[in-house]
Length: 414
Image 1 (tube, helix red, strand yellow):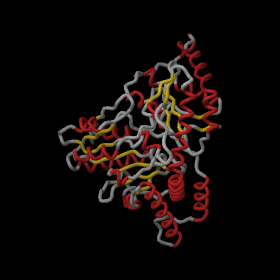
Image 2 (cartoon, rainbow, N blue to C red):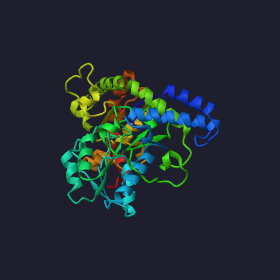
Image 3 (cartoon, rainbow, N blue to C red):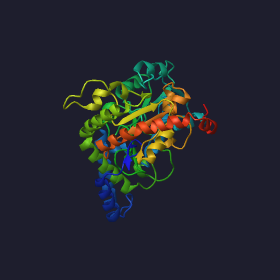
Image 4 (cartoon, rainbow, N blue to C red):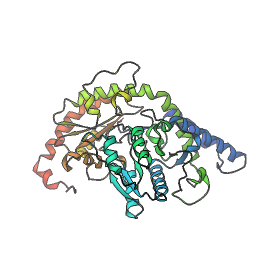
């Protein structure tokens, strides 16, 4: 099997598996217990917290372990919104391109009357400008929270969060960034970015599924979203996933050591992929990545991610008159795993909300296919994809143009 859906989750790194197996066998204690086994478990948990913090440019006390990125987004956005509401600011500014867990939390707060929301304008390439954020903030002084991703989960676009945070803070708003897709793929220094809260997840960078973390800036007191015990500085009650946290910490350490080399390798793979995709008629590229295929070569020692403004391991494309879900199924039958977008939206017949957010129509948005690299991806994987994809796209186009398909095709609702 060729796995090219790393944005949904990367395979667990061997170093992580080894550390987790050892922890499961040797650390039976609860980190909150005061006996020797509990103290050993607490020491291991705090070591993992320190590893995650170092990876993110944060302090250990600013890291709260969660069950993953979704819980981290909910805890951060809900907590910031409650803090802002206490100051009389109940409006949240976000974008139409955010992950379902961000959109869902904002919509949930709006549904209960706890907040209102405003969407910032984005360009057809999925970019967000400082002027657009200033316009969304307005001059009323009612915006309490701005939540924008550091890197888009489908397009791979990187956003100027440090500058956007400056604009938001100048308007009196607190800032959260969803850093789930960025962490492990580009350097993340949350202290330098100046954000008030951020979310990360272990399984995007070769750690285990079911564990993540939320960064809460020191000095900022966020109310917990769950009721219970005193764990995680009373911000996230419940016994910590000790084995998962240890795996997360090791994954961060391994990913940090490989970060620059991987970025350069992904850029080479991306260019090979772009050359192969270019041979398919009716190709459409989404996001910023497609703008750079013919650009200058990256100099030795020059950070790829800083040159391009996008994650080189993420490519979102469409093939005109070829529904993305059918292309994904065709590739799956060839043993190649890709996706149509966020895994949290899988199973839906609706087009990608991100592509709709770019202003695309229903049919064009339904043609999106996301190809994402990770630590297991090889040049041979990309060559195989490029070898079989043209025939699959041609076969899908032939199938959907038939009268039988047209009569059986389910309606896609706006």
